Image (cartoon, rainbow, N blue to C red; front, side, top):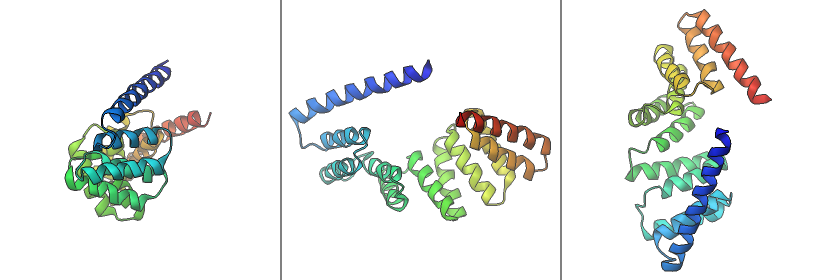
Length: 203
């Protein structure tokens, strides 16, 4: 099965990375790269606080280290500490403004806060960098729906469904967009797909 293959691939990657980290620790335990790899190893095991500490040590040695602020942000995001996560994503963007994932997460948080225009700006930046990401298309489409422009939302949500047809929420949002643009038949079709996928996820 594809899922089993993905799992085995992830395990293999983790073993290789951990072996590399151990070798690096022996040769240069206090390098920024060693601390970054240590942080990633802690993150894999769900030890978020230790991961954050290791990322901080890496940043002390190299303040502009790519991926370090984003790694910290991910730890905060996993713990639903969204404000702290956003601050770290913004710090990553100071050095690497084309990080679409950072723009995506900030945009999602701004949308949840009801800061629609800020959300659209962040998500549009993410979409400009990565036009094929279904997550970015879905989030930007959702933001345009919240901003009262279902026509713009529709094209983005169609792209989200095309790039990931198994995401139930994308179908639900697309149904809402079709309904808002006066196409009830298409809305009903997407709503039906949403219900089927939601039922499958529940089983």
